[in-house]
Amino acid sequence: MSLLSEIEECGEVIGKDTIDSFLACMQCGKCTGSCPSGRVTSYRTRRVINRLQAGDRSVLADPNLWMCTTCYTCYERCPREVRITDIIRAVRNLAAKEGYMSKSHRATASYVIKTGHAVPINDETKKLRKELGLSEVPPTTHKFPKALESIRKIIKKTNFDKLVGFDWDTMSLEERGEK
Amino acid sequence: MGYDEFRREGGKMKEYAYFLGCITPNRYPGIEASTIKVLKRFGIETRDLNGASCCPAPGVFGSFDLNTWLLIAARNVTLADMIGLDIYVTCNGCYGSLQEADHLLKERPELKEWVNEILSDEGLEYKGRIKVKHIIEVLYEDIGVDKIKDAVVSPINAKIGAHYGCHFLKPSLVRGHGSPEKPTILDELIEATCAESIDYKDKLMCCGAGGGLRSRDLNTSLEFTRQKIANMKDAGIEASVDTCAFCHLQMDRGQIEIKEKFGEEYNLPILFITQLIGLSFGFSTKELGLDKHSIPMTEKFIR
Ligand code: SF4
Ligand code: SF4
Image (cartoon, rainbow over all chains, first blue to last red; front, top):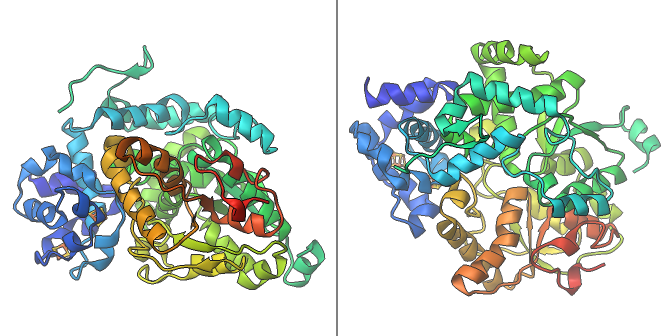
């Protein structure tokens, strides 16, 4: 499969037209010039699009791919209407499938599998909630175990647990070397 | 505004389901308390959205697996759809996920079908009857700047730096709030409290937290934050006001991390928009949870 069709597959829910928009890039560099991340890192938005156009798979292993904060500034300004930020999300999906997911990101994902929240409650906040006149535990998956079960079902259905490397027996992340 | 006035103006009391997300209820419940209190002043009631989860974060989970992202976001929207209430959120990330998911499901019938097939396990069905709104829209459209002005009893006499964050306005194609290049909506709400919204360098720049950058590379993420806060300080700004719980965490707690990592100390108070409005309505610093922020409030924000 070509890089393009693999990215299209990863980005199916956001649409083929959105993904394919990078084919119209004319390499003007406006995206790089707009990018807050490019100011402080060696990430260059235009280069990513350029490598995608060339079908260069090495882009998947490049840690710079993860320096984008999805701020959408480039997306708004691109004169060729390349849906850059959405494309980056889809390319990252493919990178994740190939195992380029950092330990810290796997940990964030595991909190949702364990609690339904990427940032779960703690004792300090429970106390503060009470002081503020709120319920000690919010009316979310934290309070409704059945809702958490539904989230887990979805996660199993999409194989998100396997993507992340989550072990249901130990309820923690499998050991996996970081690529 | 009382109930009677509300009825005169067109009928029903407005009720919303509050989609909490993660950071608001689990780190900054002051945002939750302030928002509920401020809306109540105008007869707007807030209902729990029982069983909601992480939105899940659009730039984080959307970067890992878009299918999982859409299904979980759609489930959250559907919980409100089932009880027939519009949603409001207090985080740009939650807004990004839920509003985009709702938009996709309304535009693409095949996605709706797929989502409903999976959600039917839980007895849920997405029908697309409700709207996902950002709290800024509720304040600006349902209530309006003039009514907020009229309700101010304790004017804020301070120079404020507005921080819009990214996902409230962008992508404008999906959000539909017009151009994100020169927004005024937050500045107008800030000025309704008698405060002055001051321009500063790179005002619309990202806080640095999104897209998984905060968890993956904290130093880089904080460098964005440091630049923003330094720019505000240079402009003589006394506090920053935001629209997003995640930006809020990044800019408040982030200042402690900046001090630890870069040895720079800014002490710029960070307030969520309903905390600022709450102060101007006479609520106390404590009732709004402002006394529990990492960066202490300065005198002008203590009531
Ligand atoms: S702004 Fe658009 S056209 Fe210009 S280099 Fe970037 S993606 Fe290509
Ligand atoms: S969306 Fe990403 S690539 Fe585009 S300007 Fe923002 S940080 Fe840079």
